[in-house]
Amino acid sequence: MKKTSRILVTPEAVEVIQKLKGHFGELMFHQSGGCCDGSQPMCFEKGEFKVGANDVYLGDIDGCAFFMGRDQFEYWQHTQLTVDITKGRGSSFSLEIPMGLRFIIRSRLFTDNELDSLVPVMNGEEYLDAHPVR
Image 1 (cartoon, rainbow, N blue to C red):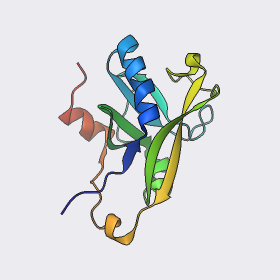
Image 2 (cartoon, one colour):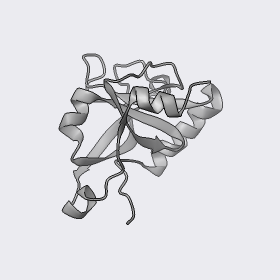
Image 3 (cartoon, rainbow, N blue to C red):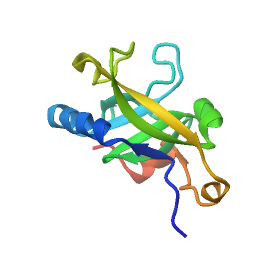
Image 4 (cartoon, rainbow, N blue to C red):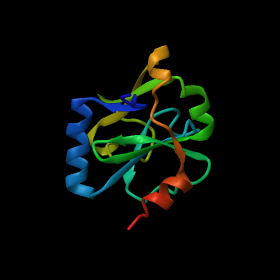
């Protein structure tokens, strides 16, 4: 049975990710739902944001690990998330902000069949054990 991905990315967002990779190297994403970034996904240089047991690894987008705070994941666990890009400056420390752009999330509920075939998640510590930061 084919597994259903929890996180997707639009071609437009991939273009921005590729530009950022060219400038910064390997990247990662985190969506916390905290005070400064709301629910905006934030892009960091790989390893720049420290993940742990209170973070959930959802999968990779364009070769970049995507994490979400556990509390935020509790609300979003029944939705497929798609990372997109839009014009405008977000109020975060995300790498795309100086470009006059910001990453955003689009979402839709999983179907019953998709819920039965979801890619399993792991916490940030488990992810780091399996994928040590160089």
